[in-house]
Length: 420
Image (cartoon, rainbow, N blue to C red; front, side, top):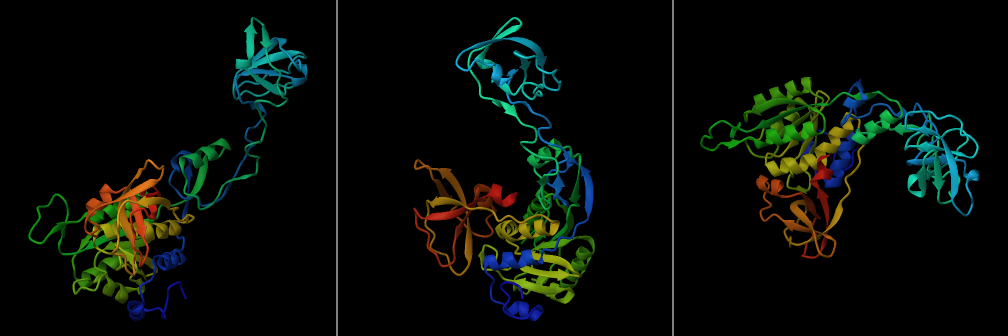
């Protein structure tokens, strides 16, 4: 039985389940998120944002040879006077990318950052501690053996694991791969995510509004959120509030995609058909989560394809996607799930309306004179007020059955953490 289950699974039982906590819902969804995507090989420079399918080992030592960490002069430490300046003949010049000759006894080699240490040298004296004089150099200070020398393999040894399977590749990961000679990477193909919105009241921007109509913002929000994860959108548009149309689109979506996400139609209204259509065409496994905004969240499967039904209110769509849908999709893509880390923030507001649901409040933070982050609350926290999401830079948590007073510390999640 999955976390949070209180009855045997099945459509009717799903409707009788208690509300799951946010933690139970996250655990249940992650347990159901089976990786599904095939693997393709792409050039390393085109792999940013993709999920690595196989761990990668280094092909070389990094650095491949002892080299200079600074511009200066390569010497043998034993040739330097222990307590005063040393004058030496400069026998060669070694720029980066060139190999020097064995160092003549008692001489120095002019060397530049990244250049290989010549045989016979074991130390680099930085140029600020030297004075050039024709083919001579005066080394004004003693140096410790090995100073300013990067040893071969000190960063990575050939055969070391450098990238782990399941990693969402960032620019620094690609740099790491390139540094050890990896020019192509095996990555999971992008997940295909079908989206559609339900509601007779919805029209697309650019169309004049008729009586009772609103613009379909959720289509744009969901599409952008999915694409931000590097996944492909299968946009099935707006579906009328009709049971047969809803059943049909669920079947079409399951034939084209690796996951299905909808907005609207999962509540208990007489015109909300998504939940009923899902129960008739597939299996309902979760409905209702103790979260605000966003309580009516449905999870199930249609022909083995996961379905996530989000509420119709635009703030609920944004919040539930960030907290529940995004981790599910990334796990299904084959990525490791790393729960976002909250930052402590001082509440500059009072919130006394918290009930049995965990609330995610739209806030904006600033650094106070005390050095702490201070959270300001958007005045209208309604689930239909998309302005609150645009104004805010993150979400603050008001836990279940908790009153937040000014000066209390709250958990704050920046958008930068929630979206990437």
